[in-house]
Length: 214
Image (cartoon, rainbow, N blue to C red; front, side):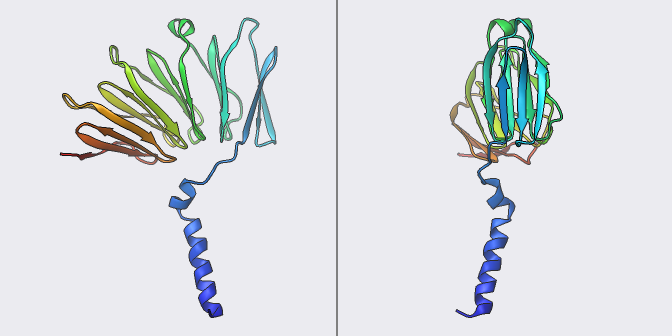
């Protein structure tokens, strides 16, 4: 093989590795370490910056998690979250009913979700702030999933899609007699199959895409 041919192939390989498609599935190093002491919540970001938040005397940890660029604590009083873009701990107080029934938590490399009977609270690396949306009354959750930059919460009547890129939610309602078959999340995409449609949401999109199966 000629030298020019080898250089051309090397250029193609490098170009491919730098494309968004290739980078979208890159494994993310765990960059956030979190610790709870008797008096404080501590976060060390990328081994260079550290943040401290005072811990209440009656505050107890119910859940904690750190993955990729996100770290969080759920206590009996509030939610605390931090990302590689944070300058301090971000906190959100729990409602009275949420203190009685601890929320469910989802964590991915770039996205955190707190799910309760009243609301869904999200926290992403790009937005580095909380966003919340109301949970519909009388609609039990049938599926949840999170991976990479996306997360989904599905009830009997609709699906909510979240992205680390947006401080918002993409919502889609199901049709009459439409039922959920499967839910899958990859690094940048949510795929929801129902009895009537294939519904997808990519991390950079604001609305769901749908394809009829009949």
